[in-house]
Amino acid sequence: MGSRFQKVEGAVTAPRGFQAAGVAAGLKPSGAADLALIVSECDAVGAGVFTTSQVKAACVTYGQGILAQQQPVRAILCNAGQANACTGEEGDRNNAQMAAWVGEQLGIPAAQVLTASTGVIGRQLDMPKIQAALPSLVKTLSAEGGENAARAIITTDLVTKSIALETEIMGYTVRVGGISKGSGMIHPNLATMLAFLTCDAAVEPSLWQGILQRAADLSFNQITVDGDTSTNDMLLALANGKSGIPTLQPGTEAAQILAEMVNTVCIHLAKAIARDGEGATKLLEIQVRGAVEDAAARQMARVIASSPLVKSAAFGNDPNWGRVAAAAGRAGIPFDSRRLDIYLGEFLLMQAGMPLAFDRKAASAYLKGDPVTFTVDLHQGSGQGIAWGCDLSYDYVRINAEYTT
Image (tube, rainbow, N blue to C red; front, side, top):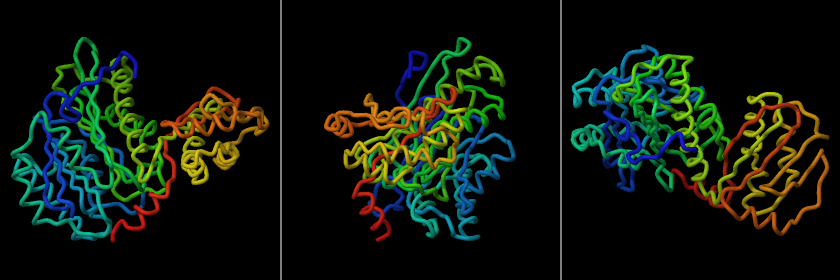
C-alpha cells in the first residue's frame, strides 16, 4: 500500500459527513442483518459502474437512470435477500417505492436515493418487511455504522469486506472508505458483487466517474471465482466535499493522488471477494508481464485466473504449469510461445517455451499456502496486468447445488 495512504477505522463512515446503519428486516431466512443504508449529510457527487449483463435487475436500471441525470445524490439503500431481478414491472415499482420510502424518512427527494439488491433471482422484494424496518434503519444511522452496513449486505460471504484510507492532498486530510460483498457468481465485468465507496473530497463529476471506472478496470473487473456474471452487480461511489478541499479537476496531481487511493481501496475489496470465493481455500494472483500493452496483459491474466483447470490444480496443490500455458494460449492475445516463461512463486517452471526441472515437492508445498502467485512473462513489451481468483474446491459445487433448496 505504501506510506502515502494510511488505514483508518470506519469503512464507509470514515470519510467526514457520512453515516451508515444495518438492521435485520427479516429478508434472510437466517434472521441476520439484511438491510443497509449509507447517507451523506450533504449533497454528494455520485458515480457508478454496473453489470454488463443484458439481464439487469431493477436496481441497476434505476441507478443508471439516476446517475445519468448528473444530479446530487445523498443515500444508498441495499437489501440482501431478494435480487429483484427478472421481476418485471412490479419489481421496478417496488424498487422505486423503496427509494421513495427512504426519501420520506430522510426528508430528501427519492431521486437522491440509489438502491441495490442481492439475493435469489426471480423473487419479488418483501416490501412489508422493508417498509417496517426502515424507521429503525434510519434511527440507527451513525458515524460508527460502517461495519454494521458491511454485515447487512452479505449473502453467501463468509466474512465482511471493508477498508478506509486517508492521505494528505493539497494540505487537506482526505479519506476514502469502502465496503463490498461477493463470494460466488464472480467474473470480470463485475459479478455477483456490490461495492459502495464514500469520499470526503470535492470532485468534478466527470472526473469522479472516470476515477471510478478506471478503478473498476484495475480491481473488480480483474477478479473471478466461477466465470459467471450476475444481474445486480454495481459499484457506487459518493463524494461529498466535507474535507474542505477545493473541487479537484482533471489532469491535476491532486486528482491523480485521489485516483490512486480509490484504486487501492477497490483492489483491496476485490481481492477480499476473490479470497472469499465460495468453497475457496486460497487466493490466486495471476501476474502477466512483458505484453505489448497493459490491456492485453490484464485480459490474459483474467483468462488464466478463470480457468477451471488452473483453479482445480491449485486446489489439489499440483504445480501443473501446462494448464497455465494452455490458458494463456487461448486468451486471444498473440504472442510467441517460444519466448514464454511461467513462474509459480519463485519457482521457474517454464522458460523460453520449454519445461525446466524444478523441485516438485517444494512447489506443491508452496501451493498449500495463501496467497499463491503465478507469473507469466511474454517478453514482448512493457505491458503488465494482474488478476485475482481462487481455487475450485468440492465445496463450491455443494454450495451452489443447494443454493435455493
